[in-house]
Length: 161
Image (tube, rainbow, N blue to C red; front, top):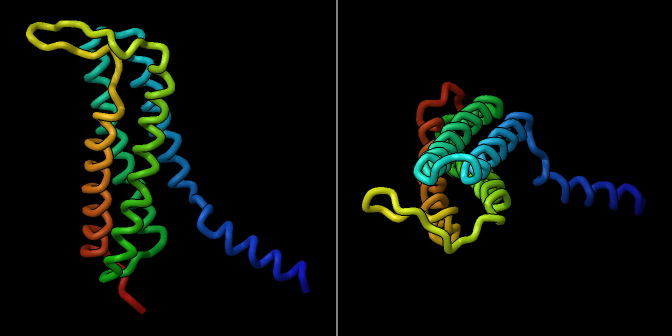
């Protein structure tokens, strides 16, 4: 009996760790985008590197929205399941944002934080300051997560049973 109970507790504990192929694909793509954006601070001009960094984040948000919508369809999220829609939207956006920023942060660790380049009248940092960037990125992720799930729930072709 102890074996059965321990197996059930392991199943309950691992229930939250299951990732679908869609979620894994989104995680991989956002990490790859972070690697490209982080490496841009080594090989591109500062203004170009910052453009790539911001564009990479926008593409991460597009991937998050797409994977959230695919997951809503695959799980047949019914119309009117607002709480589950919001939760699913946030489950898909926050991990992708975290992996994107983590990849960029790890790749830009070798660049001194106090270096800056003047481009016209603007001073550009040599690498992102994640204490300043993270709140903006997570706020954007929260907005996307709160919008994507309910929009799908509102237009879902599936009915509650």
